[in-house]
Length: 120
Image (cartoon, rainbow, N blue to C red; front, side):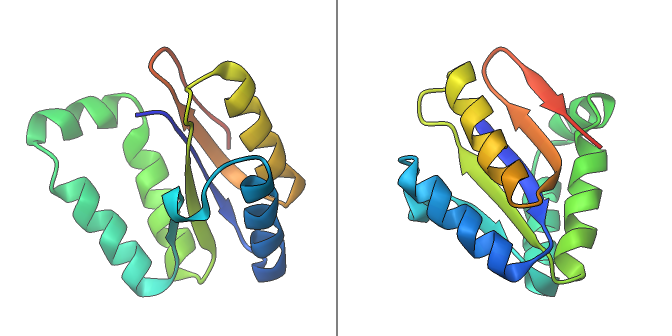
């Protein structure tokens, strides 16, 4: 439940972002990375496999908008990355968002036990 997700369009910037995240202590294998049609289909499958009650709650909380945005970004060949927050702290969330932003990330969304936020 504790994560930051974003879209990075540029391949080299995406790779540099991953390097910086790993340097910050996030294991690369713990990150979720989706790209292309397969990535979009995987995202749709994950979302649609949730119970109808969860999906209704998600739509009310604007999560559906981000899922659609991420699916389209993946279809366009951009990189959709999900980064877990190992300790769920505000400081870790801010550091990860900062790293992603430094590399051109947009459509940032984060969720912790206590907060949920997103940008355009």
